[in-house]
Image (cartoon, rainbow, N blue to C red; front, side):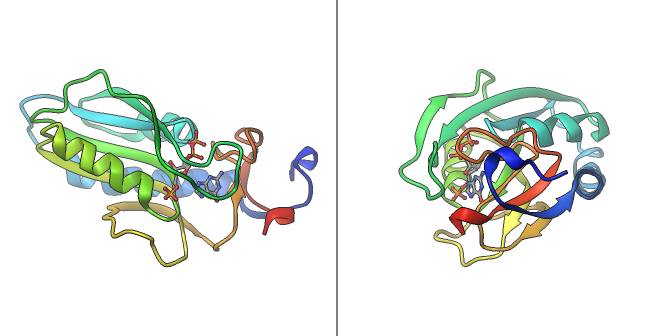
Length: 182
Ligand SMILES: O=P(O)(O)OC[C@H]1O[C@H](OP(=O)(O)OP(=O)(O)O)[C@H](O)[C@@H]1O
Ligand SMILES: Nc1nc2[nH]cnc2c(=O)[nH]1
C-alpha cells in the first residue's frame, strides 16, 4: 500500500521483497561470523534512527553471540540532500578488540558509513563488517567498503522500512521513491 500522506510516491519494493532481502543478508552474515570464536560477542551497532527496522528484522536470523548497541548520527535531518555529519549518541559498549557489525538502512554518498568505520577503527575494533538494507546506484562521494547489501535502489530519494521522508514514512511497508523531490 502506497502511503498517500507523503505525496506522490512510486512503490519500488514490497515488504515481502525487503524481508526476503534481509533474510538473504542474514544468511551471508551468518556464514562469515557464526564460526568465529572471538573472545567476546560481536557488537552489532545499529545506526539510528533509520536502521531500527532492518536491525529488528535481521537480529532474530543471526545465529552467533552478539550484543546490541547503537550509534546515532544524522546528516539529512528533514532534507533530501545531506549536510555535515552530526553526532548524537556514541556506542556504550567498548569497541576495543571487538568484532563489529555495523548495520545501516541506506548507503548513499557513503559519508555516514565511512565516518562510522573510521570511528570503529579509532576505538580499536578488531574487525568491522558492514551491512546496508539498500544501496543507492550512484557514484560514491567517498570510498567505502560494504560487505552485505540487501537491495539496490535508483538514484532518487527513497523512504519506508525505517527510511524517512522529512521525519515521516519510516513505517511505510516497503520501499518507495518520493516523487515530488526527484
Ligand atoms: O551515505 P550517506 O549519504 O552518508 O547517507 C546515508 C545516511 O543517511 C541516512 O541518515 P540520516 O542522516 O537521514 O539520519 P536518520 O537515520 O536519522 O534518518 C541513513 O540512515 C544513513 O545513515
Ligand atoms: N530517507 C532517506 N535517507 C537517505 N539518506 C541518504 N539517502 C537517503 C534516501 O534516499 N532516503
